[in-house]
Length: 255
Image (cartoon, rainbow, N blue to C red; front, side, top):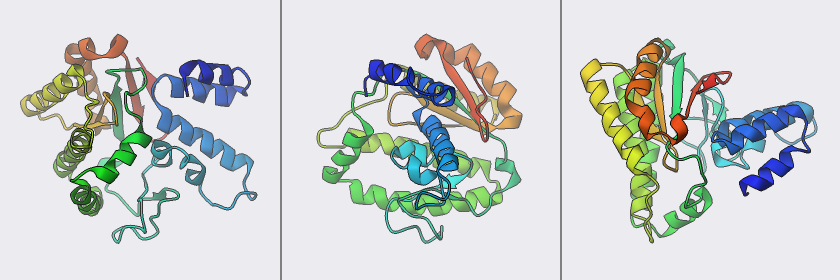
């Protein structure tokens, strides 16, 4: 939907929904649509055929995966995650205290709409010659990730998260026709993150949405060092210097 249409819609909504709509417009649609779905689920409790607001959030792919430690699996379910399904996210069975306070600094390289929508990108996977390999890799990596979360292995987490991020964009580049959503700033930021991590031993992992923006994941105890790094080295690559600092639970802040 064009931004002007979102703004016009917001003028007719209650304050809670108007606030979330503004956040959708400015770059965090998944989390905000998840908030909206939770509010609707509370309002309609007992009148809709589901027991999870993630069912409503599934109208948007990123929203149904947003929230505190939820898993979603497209297909008949994942053997390592009983109860997983394509309709709504389910809570993770357990995770190590090392992952209790994960932070996410969203580095906004490009705030505008994507050149290729997620829906079109999913459709292009039908003709991608590497699709079947990627689906197997994703299934294997989910099992590995669950083990990493149980044991508190941050080094394994960093490696796997970055593998997944780069694999996602590899699928875009090998689609028919191929397309590239990373920008010059995206690539520069990824190189700087890896160099800083090697030099400082600060635990942080980059991941990517289906666009140019970079998400930087790290434990809360590294927050001060990571924010200094962002301020000192990454701001020139960001759209208006914009960063959204997020965390598990309530949203943190935007700079």
